[in-house]
Image (tube, rainbow, N blue to C red; front, side, top):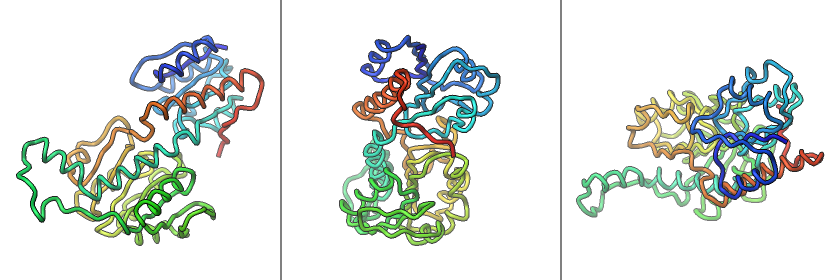
Length: 318
């Protein structure tokens, strides 16, 4: 079974892949273009792709394909046209579960950093402009007791909610596309605009894809309190980035904490210069044990498929 791994993985994962399959490893920073993705579909039996590899509808033109499975490294698959893959007879899998706690931790990191102006404070100190402690210096927002509104109450959304409620005494409200029973004190809000108006902190934890693209636009940002912050650990294109920049520049919201961007790795200069924006380079799962667990899950999907079993984490087309 010829396997293509499109990006370097943790050493333990690469060693397993090399031992178990006839594996080719790519070592570039950029993901596959649709043209290169289509070529890979014709040359390999299996592909282990990740974010940035553009398996768009264009990539699935020009059958027949040798590839029968795309074992994605990561839970999000908005870079893969799952319906086109299924139409071509290709199974798509992902790695849910392994990313939950690490991604929730980054959400809390961004909440705290944005509310307490931590990024701005570090820049002040590193630039040698800190003049010492003062009673009114760098006053931020006290997080304990704020109302958090979570958009998307899946595994990650619920993990964020637990940390907020039990760790910081935050009342939790949430918006989900379907009714959701959760095992913690939380209130479901039927309309997104109602959540945006009520929450002090809005956290986006929805899947990426066409259904959620630009879910948060100018109207949603306008509904937020001027004292509220927006945190995005989902996918960059869930937010209308231009509208967010305008809202931050105008002070229509207090701040934003972002780990994802609409056109990664491009981050607009207008966003980079804003002191009320905390910007991380997509660190959601950036811990060695987490990335190794993601790799094991992706490889478990491949092994199951190679052995004629149903892979444990098949992604269903919308």
